Length: 170
Image (tube, rainbow, N blue to C red; front, side):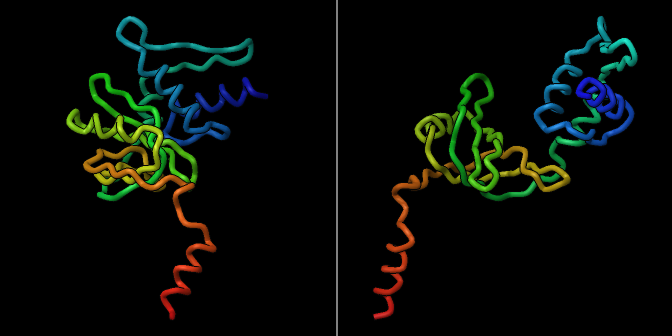
């Protein structure tokens, strides 16, 4: 049942950095956020039912970070739709890639804020330092360059591309 799956998943995370069955990245991030709110006054949060009690501690946040946090850095590019710009303090936006429709956090410095806002809602190419997890999933990028790409309806159709190639053979 659902409650048992949640309780056993939290128990696993309290012991080791292993993704529990049925725990998505989003669920792990929410649990990590809850665990990070613990402080000197409240060091443990106990959740439970009549049969089982689990404890949420800072150890859970560390183990979750090990599972979903970035581990590798490399320079590269990402294409997708620029969405969700934030200009408060440390500006960032998200890109949703066409390959898997996942969100990738894109951090920018203040001098790129206007460029970020100009491209809001558009397909873009960004280049910079990419942070990835052990499994290769891209987590974030420190953006050095943003370039707007043509929208999907501005791209040539297959028939138009065949026509362009055929003209080149004459």
